[in-house]
Amino acid sequence: MFVAMTIPGTATAFAAAPPVGPAFAVASVRPSPGEVVGIGYQPTVTFAKPIADRAAAERTISISTTKPMTGRFNWTKDDTVRWIPDGFWPAHSRVTLLAGGKPQQFDTGAGVVGVASISAHTFTVSIDGQVAREMPASMGKPTRPTPVGDFTILEKDRSVIMDSRTIGIPLSSPEGYRITAYYAERITSSGVYVHSAPWSVDSQGHANVSHGCINLSPDNAAWYFNTASVGDPVIVQA
Image 1 (cartoon, one colour):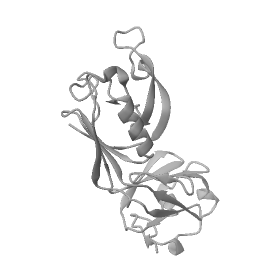
Image 2 (cartoon, one colour; image 1 turned 180 degrees about the vertical axis):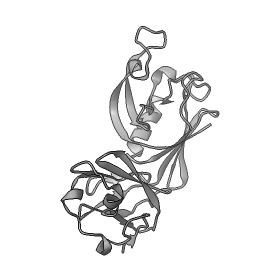
Image 3 (spheres, rainbow, N blue to C red; image 1 turned 60 degrees about the horizontal axis):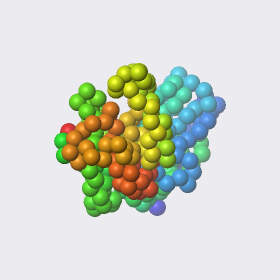
């Protein structure tokens, strides 16, 4: 049995959702139907055209799950809104999202939470409340610090090319680089990743030497890549 989610300014049950006209036609919804996502996932609705009346559009969206939750809408584009829950979805549960007059469901996986400690040089992963692995890590050097805060995995890449020019460092600079990183999870839109960094293994657990990313050994990075899902929380602490 699903309990209606409390979303400020929206209907709290599917039956109460207002009719959806062409002004609020939906082009896509993420996650996809049946997808398994992390407990920090932020569902995203993209409308078929830019929205002038955002409040009215928000009222056409309703979410239900086994645990009542609150949250807020955040518009990332004129046609795209995401819903940011207050706290985490319940692990191992099903969420039903109504948008565009059509319900679809997605599931949450285990409660996989990564905590990076900049001062302790560690990355600790808990699964369903139990510490599963504490790993030596290296975060951003003082001139390129890793941002502190609560993030979620935005995407996972088996390999990704990292180019210093994307953060304003020319390749000709002593700080310049163009590398292929493996087992990478992006946690910010600016390009901060958790990833394998064999070149910094000697510093992991002892010093912060990266350009802002969270560096792990190849073995630890592969384990995390195979354990975590898009939407899983990553908490960076000083």
